[in-house]
Length: 331
Ligand code: PMP
Image (cartoon, rainbow, N blue to C red):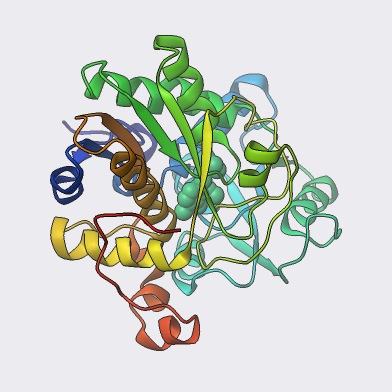
C-alpha cells in the first residue's frame, strides 16, 4: 500500500513470536516490533499523538517550533514527523546517550542542545531546560512527554488494541519498562479494560525508583544501568495505571538476552527491549510449561546502540560479558 506521509506508517507493527524463549519455557512470548516504526522506536507513537493533539487544540500552529527534553527516541520521533509537516525541532538531551541518536537527530535537521546528566531536582536537567527554552522562544510548543497525557492515550488507542487483537484476545501477561510510563500506562489501561485478569508487570533497570515504589511504596533506588530511555525517580501523569508486580533486571541479564536474541532469533533489539524480554522470559520461567501468552515491547533496535553494545571495549569497561541465557533465572 502506498502512503503519502511518514506519519501514516507509525504503528500497526507486527507482533513477533520469540521462538527460542517460547520453546525454552513452554510459554508463548511475543514481542511488538516497535523498531519498525519510521523513526525506529516505540516513541513515534507518542510523538504522533502529542503533535496531532496539539494541532487539534491550537497549541501547535504552522511555523511553530517543537521543543522537547528526551533521552533521544522521542526527539527522533518528533523530528521525523516535524520534518514532513514543516515544523522546526529543538531537542534537549543529556550528553551520555549513544552517538547514533545525536547523529540521527542532526541528520533530521534539529537544533540539538546537550546538557550534563543530573538529578531531576537540578534546574539544568534536560526536562527543565526544554521547558525553559520553550518559554523563551517565540512560537514554541513544549511537547512535555512526561506529563502530557496525549502520550499514554496514543498507546491506549493503538499499541494496546493492536497487541490484544494480534494475540486473538488471549493475553495472560504484559511486561514493560517505563521511561515516561506512556507505553505501560496506555497498554495496561486498555488490557485491563478488556480483561482484569491480565497480569501487568513492570520491568525496571537498576538505578530506577519504580521497582521499590511498586514493592515498598517508596521511590528509592540503588545501582545504575547502561540502558537508555528507561528508569525514573518520580511518578508521572502517564504512569498512573496500577501494575500487579515489578521485577528488576540487571544489565548483565539484559546484555546476555540482547545477544541471545540476535544469535537465536535474528532479532537485533536495543537495551530497553532486551530488558523487557528478559523480564517476560522470567515470568515465563515462573509459569514454566503452562502455555501462558506473554506480550512485551521491542522498543527499538540494537543498531541504535551499536557503538556501545557491539563494542567489546565498552562492555569490558562496564564489566559485562555475554553469557548463555539460563533455563532458570537469576537477578
Ligand atoms: N525504551 C526506549 C529505548 C525509550 O527511548 C523509551 C522512552 N524514553 C522507552 C523504552 C519507554 O517508553 P515510555 O516513555 O512509553 O515509558
